[in-house]
Length: 327
Image (cartoon, rainbow, N blue to C red):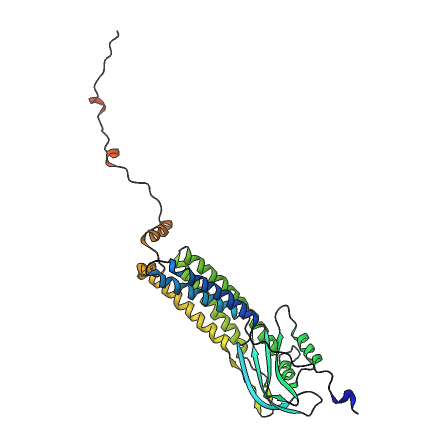
């Protein structure tokens, strides 16, 4: 008879993995609802401006959804490796598994998927998140993982990002992630301002706000790149190394930032070269355009009529003397 009947009591059951990120699902639902509402009211728009209006709505919702969603995604940097590794501490069991590392702005995700999934009489399918945001303590999350008895590969990868690790990757990624997150929140604000300016319509300044949105998104990428290009500790499982590269969120942010840059430049160039074409894109008739331009023109008094200017000037010596007789 062995201690604990041959089982290891510190290890809990496998955590169930939700099939998608709930935060991203909520954001996508909100923006898709707004798009569906816009499509419903589309038949009420007359003329050629219907297509341009739909394109503007789709572009605006897409940019806003991307800027908001990438704040919570966890694949700014990711990598996978397939290796034969020990499964748990105090055990000689060796499993073949796919180990993944996914780095976001607020923490890291470490995944462990067996190849095949069912090995050593267990289902090997783990996805653990370790946060380093302002209201989270990464070391505390790592300590909780130790207490729960997470598999050794997950703890080994997570240990590389602790504050006490000699790799010093925690400080680099945490600071760069915070600055990137702040610039993305600022980009969301400038995007909202651009939407308001285009709806007023003040097209030129709306284009400037789109350029500012693009600049902020590109700056967020630069902040993240500073951590990506710093020296790292190798993450090795036997002869196999876990190497990471830029993930989907990084490339999506880059593409959206370039899209904002092109749209902003297009609005500014059309406003200076072909203002009538720009008014056609934004479905502005001549009356609205003149009314909007009227804010920038000083209101001058109307010129006086010719009848008011033509005043009969008679010399004083030529005035007729008028005599009165007393009755």
